[in-house]
Length: 556
Image 1 (tube, rainbow, N blue to C red):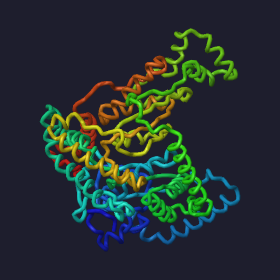
Image 2: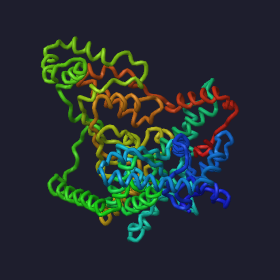
Image 3: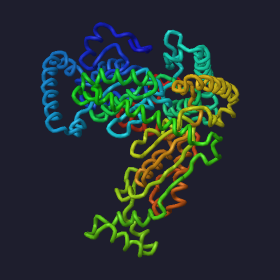
Image 4: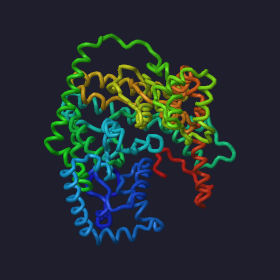
């Protein structure tokens, strides 16, 4: 069975669950015979629970009378053979289409839901690097505590090559200390948060406890290492999965290569023809190509780049932008409304006074009633390149944006770590920092011998450098979303600073970003939790006496 604390499946549960999952005893498995809305709801719940997906499906969906699962179960149990025949016929037809026409885009029309359980954050980030065609949903560090143990062991990945090395004892000691410190500091940090942000009149106990718990877990997540085991739900189309499998086969980490093999096995049961080429010689050759190029470029970089310390630069630095962005954007706004060639439109726009160009931009943005009212494609005309330096926890949040270009440097400890000021005020910073320092020495020691596995020992509090290239349209989305009150204060600060720098170079283009929130808040999640109260009220499910006082997030 998977590495989990879930109650083992009974014989009856196995019988009922079998038609809906591709296997019953491995941590990588797919969903089948379920309506799409159920799969989406399952993954949504998955991100805020420490249960396995199978257990959530059994306990919270199949057991709920209002879910209407009984007919689904009956149909799945009686029609499984018939469905298999139909699936085989469809696969045979697809094979003829693919062979006869060679149309790769056909593979984008079929998709699959797959659960990846008990994988490290190294693996989770590799899955989430896929930008197009794959939609990941990861277990939250804000709603779920990572302090549980299985068979007396904290849940972090132990790379086989590392555990067979002289560094094994040191690695385990450092990781155990991180998790022990995380667990020990939960109660005092939560007490501090609640002591400094008392519950206001009109705020429900449920909303207050949930918001303060999220704040405490935010403050402590820097102790979690990249080895921390997590769950990731994936929905993707066949073409995207095929490329993902190829990239995983080329990865330097054994965990990622084994994850790719496990995904291949499950996808072969769900969309076999769509991912067939990943296990052919063509797929193997592509994987070798990716691995060889990565190694070659890494060698050149180490040879040609200076070995000096990085220059001191701002944590958020706008490195590149187009000085003609306003002119090009205004031309792109006007272009669909004329029959003139683009070059002629641009030449005419260049003769317009700034006030006239501003009037065109204002009309294009229109009266935005909310951040969901997003300007059109003309704002894709201009791009901005940012160099960012922030702790790994913040990187993990911002990595989720896929409609842009992101590339990170290696996970490491060379850029130092971030200690939240609230932990200093709480009086636990020394304990927090000591665990991080021990982990840093462990990373450095492992790096010398096993550079590909050393990143597993890097805690989230350590900084990583990465670059983002995004267009103006995506900047509206990212900066308004990530500066919203309910966001983590770390990425809110980055979004706010990116907004200031774009506004500084292109004030007319940034003027329409009306929903960038530049304020600071004590309890970021409180308003979101109060909105949830309102929804529960509307559904008649609100319990005014609820006292969700736990910190582990397992109650929801």
